[in-house]
Image (cartoon, rainbow, N blue to C red):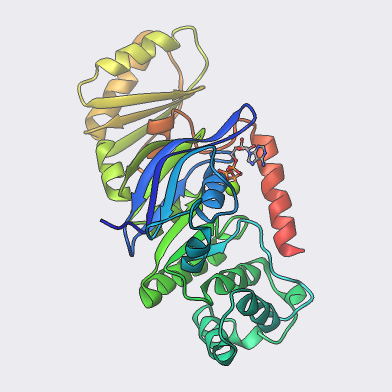
Length: 333
Ligand SMILES: Nc1ncnc2c1ncn2[C@@H]1O[C@H](COP(=O)(O)OP(=O)(O)OP(=O)(O)O)[C@@H](O)[C@H]1O
Ligand SMILES: [Mg+2]
């Protein structure tokens, strides 16, 4: 079978850092496939290899059957790539940016205008097309970026964190455009994100990536189902009896799995209402104080915790927030 995207043991090292570590996956034509992972997981590095901007250290990557190393030109003709950082020129108008992009992509002169009209209409920027990008919001700039990636009607569209730093309403709007692009052009879409909800909303299948390695690939639905049907989150006060509390919890019959992250315990269970009273009983027997407890349906957040053992955030949360903030400022500037 000819896949839209195929990687075989793809690996990229920067000195001691293995940014992409033995990554193998396939994406079928017409699929929306998502790479879900925290900062530094290896998402952008993988995308840069797939879009011929970076050479892998070892392994192979094929786009529509073309090898990124052996046939980079064919690969580039088949793909659109919208980078993580916005690339539009602030001092040009929206339309001028697209004209530039169309020329870079060697779109025939007599088709440039109609193609631009088409993508502007699709992402609803026709009204603002003759204003300079300086006046655009972060969301509008991102939409213009996406429009630029569509002009040459690629078979495979790469979107690297298409909604990072945008507010939730703007993100939802961008999800709508991505779905519309997918339906209208019947494109294969490969996107990366660290938003669970985004992957859940958009993707047919998701690969969870952490530390350069793929932890699991499946549909959002299967991932959630594999967790057991309910999740109990417990926060406890620090205590010497923490370990015995944990081992007693493991003995409860309908508890499938427990993850421990500092004082927060995440229990994957098949019958939550049965488990909760037992949790309280054990805690009072052992003398552990529960600060909070909640019962929810599993989300992709829970799936991520289950496969990687930690929540989807940087180990150093401060740095992460700063970085996010810097990105946002850049988008708004
Ligand atoms: N040019 C480079 N030189 C050295 N190290 C690099 C380089 N590019 C990436 N890395 C490292 O490779 C790892 C993966 O980075 P990458 O940018 O692919 O992650 P990411 O998943 O896209 O993260 P983010 O969500 O922050 O965009 C990180 O440890 C990063 O520091
Ligand atoms: Mg990245």
